[in-house]
Image (cartoon, rainbow, N blue to C red):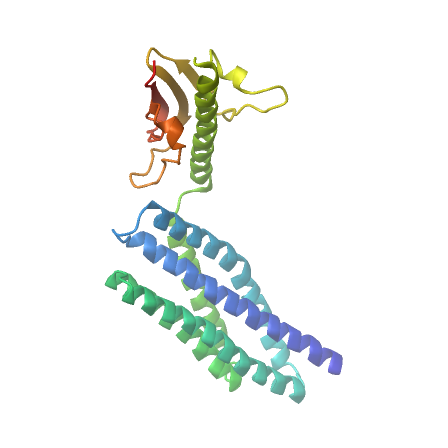
Amino acid sequence: MEHHTAKHFVLQLGSLASLYVSLSFLLVLLFGIINLRFPDPTEGYWALESAASSVRIGIAIVVVFFPTYLILTRIVNRLRRTGASDTYLALTKWLVYLSLLIGGGVLLGDLVAVIIGFLEGELTQRFLLKAFAVFIVTGAAFHYYILDARGYWLTHEQKSIMFAIGAAVVVLASIGVGIGHIETPSEVRERNLDEKQLTDLQDLQWRIVSYYERENTLPASIDILYEAGMTMPMAVAERTEYRYEPTDTGFTLCATFSHPTPHDQFTRPFFPEDKAAQFSGLDNWEHGVGETCFARTLKQL
């Protein structure tokens, strides 16, 4: 009996742990959706990227932990209804109350963060929606487990099942809305490729400028910029190769992009002043969709 009591206790602990992980990241998901749905004009591109990242993380964790919670809770409730010992039932009640205390403190901390955001100038609409989300999520969990500690669900199995179905519908709806507010995996990959290409072009540009300073002439091709054993940046297979062309006034670097530069994205990396003083256009990396050529002017030509 002691062996079974320990096993049942661990199952209950796993159920409650997966619950609070699910609730915490359901709120992360909902907050991310709210931030994307109601963008703050005082925030820029990176705030939206952060919100989209929160939505992705929230979806991933909720998809794993919420079904785990439902399965473990179903097993635990069946064990409690079929001859569980008084010792186990007493331990479970203590565990439920303790988890409500700890988990409630963590989740109410989310509400404190929401209020702080509002006091720091967050949009009133976003504040109200986030506060509402916290109250609904925490309120539903507390309602269920306060009744559970009183043994209510042991004698109302069908109502327990209906409560679980209702929670699952809310979670699935949240996941669906979240997916609708973020880019698809293929779109994210294409945007990441755009960023990689910008990094490659910046490396090429630095080498071209350094070569010009040493040789007082532009390289005939970018191949000579890389010594034996060094890997030259290459475009991925589905993109056209990088193109370098010396011009009468300087040079151009060309690449193909799948997305335009966000209007407020910071894409102007630092360039040493002693080099920038000799050239113009080095920090302009704004691009559209398709092939874009970045023109650089050598002032000393």
